[in-house]
Image 1 (spheres, rainbow, N blue to C red):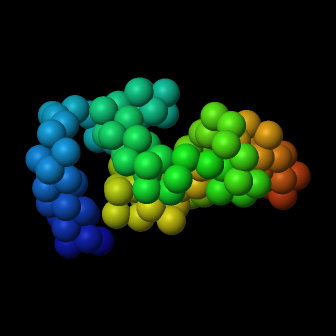
Image 2 (image 1 turned 45 degrees about the horizontal axis):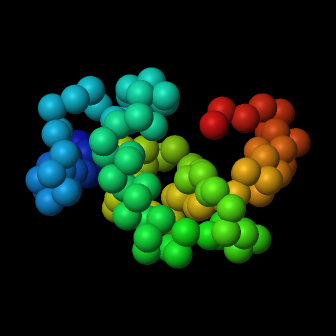
Length: 110
C-alpha cells in the first residue's frame, strides 16, 4: 500500500507540473469536499474532461448544464488517473442517480 501511495503521489506531482497548478495544498483526499470541488485540481480536471467527453450528459445526452459526478470516492484526488470514476450528468439525471443510491443504501454522501 505504501508503494502504491508513493506512485500515486509521484503521478500527482507530475500531473500538477504538467497542468501548472500548485501541489502545495492540503491532501486532496482528505480536504473537506466543498474545498475539493473549489480546488484548481478539480477545476482543471473538470474542464479537460468536459471537452474530451463532448459536454453532454453521459446518461441522456442532453446538452443542458452538466455536473461532474463521482461514481466512487475511492480514488479521490487521483481522478485524473481514474477517469472512469467520474460521469457528467445533467441535473435531472444527477438527481435520479442520487435517488437510486439513497434507495439502495439509505443515504447519500455525495
